[in-house]
Length: 320
Image 1 (spheres, one colour):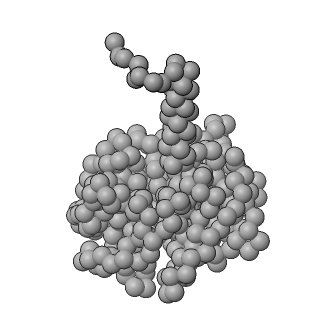
Image 2: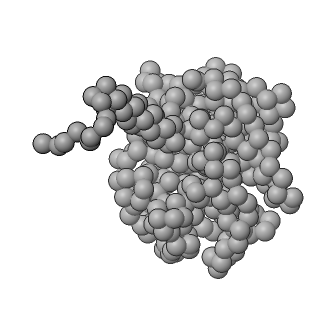
Image 3: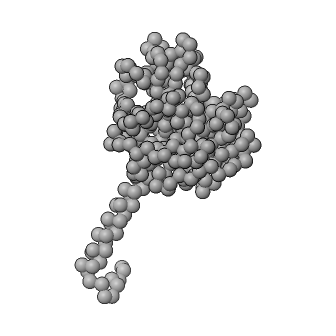
């Protein structure tokens, strides 16, 4: 039994109990909002459009940067609604390549497609960016896909999951395999793999354990940047001209790393953004886009590599 504090009437105590319940509810709502947002971004080579994965609303969106309009792209494929969408990647097939369905190889898409990590349904789908939105399933995986990475001109798609890293060869009937030599992740987001990015010789993959560099020729992974409970590495992008890796922390900052893994401060991100992912705003790689929480009202921000200037894109949520 607990004694009621002296001097506090019962109606006051009931009021305090109600207030505590309200505060608990609000804190739960805030915690939910803190993990919901745009989890990935992929932009056209000219920087005129960007596609985003809206995790909370389980859909993909299309942003036209010139007039700052934002529209829903799609929220389903092959008769199945998306169940969380955490990765998007534009693909411009070279020569005679097409995006074909894993189970129906004659069902193929020509021209530019958006590859989508349909996380909850454990699949990667392809959707044409123009014309009729006929969709195909590129790959079904043992684990839930998180992020996607692809080098321009390549047919090899890399997919992260919390547990494993996969490669999908779009030129070999979508052959999906666990990438040999990569490290085990963890079944939870705190320690599992999240973002990943490519250079000519390496695949970098990011998670709670740190940033790993995987040699695609020798098939060996080494720890490139250590991770702690304070770093919370979230995503990465590779800059071709400077040969630097840009690494995003969930804590609201971006570092660069040279080929030896030595890091330098690049930029801070407003804490209200609570960043999820990074992506180049165009093929020129002059600006880095950083996606934000839905609750922040900022869809993404663009950071100029030369000046450090930041531009916010506050676009309406077409999936809400």
